[in-house]
Amino acid sequence: MHTDPQYIILLGPPASGKGTQATKLRAALELPHIASGDLFRYNLKHQTELGLKAKGYMEQGELVPDAITIRMVMARLRQPDCAGGALLDGFPRTIAQAEALEAALAEEEAQVNLVLNIVVPDDVLVERVTGRRLCRECGASYHVKFLPPQAAGICDKCGGELYQRPDDTEETVRTRIAVYWEQTSPLVDYYRQQSVLVDIDGNQSVEKVTESLTAKVAPIMVSRN
Ligand code: AP5
Image (tube, rainbow, N blue to C red):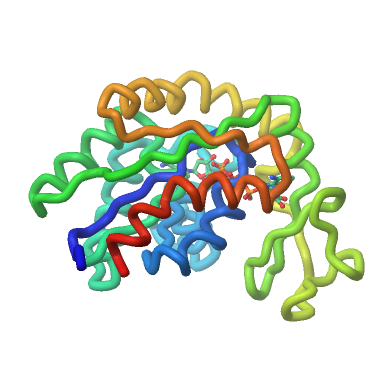
C-alpha cells in the first residue's frame, strides 16, 4: 500500500464544475477538499480580518492578492487532516501561487500529482453562473435549469433557503472569466510542461464529467487503498 501524500488540483474557469465534482470525488479519494473560494466566504461570513481584506476583490470578480491567498491556503494545508494530501479547488490560480505551493510541498518531499483541467466554453459558463443557487444552511449547490431543487428556493437536503452568490451576476462573471484567461490559464501550460495535467471535457452532463474524472483519478485511488 502506498501512503505517499497525494495532491490533486481541480483547475478550470468559474462555474466549470470544480465544486460540483469535488464533492463527488473527495470521498472516493479520501482526501480533504480545500476550496479557496469557500475559505474566503467562511472568513467573510465571520467578518474576520482576512474576510474583510478579501471582500472588495471578490465582489468585483478580481483575484485576492497572492500574499493573502497563499498564507490562507498554506495555513489550511498544515492542518493534520491534510497529512495525506488534498483535493485543491480554485487554488492555485496564478503562477506565483503554483510556485508557492510547489515550494511548500517540496519541503515535505511531496509534489502536485495530478491536475484535472476542466474545459468549458465561456458562453456555457455564463449560463451556469447566473443560474446557480446555494443553500444557506448546508451549502448544497443547485442550478435553476440544470439541477433544480424539487421546490423552488428550498434545499432538497435540509430544507434551507437557497440564495444567489453576490458575485454570480452576469457582469461580475464576465470579469471573472476575463481574469481566468489573463491570470489563471497560463497554469495550463505550466502544469502540462510538468506532465501532470489532463484535460477533461466539462461541457457534458455532471454524471459524464464525474465518469471522466474518476477514470483519471482511478490509479491514485488504487494506490491509496
Ligand atoms: P471561487 O469560489 O473559487 O469561484 P470560481 O472559481 O469562480 O468557481 P465557482 O465556485 O464559481 O465554480 P465551480 O467551478 O466550483 O462550479 P460549480 O461546481 O459551483 O472564487 C470566488 C472568488 O474568490 C474569486 O473570484 C476570487 O475573488 C476569490 N478567490 C478564490 N480563490 C482564489 C485564489 N486562489 N486566488 C485569488 N483569489 C481567489 O458549478 C457552477 C454551476 O453550474 C452550479 O449551479 C452547478 O449546479 C452547475 N453545473 C456544474 N456542472 C455542471 C454540468 N456538467 N452541467 C450543467 N450544470 C453544471
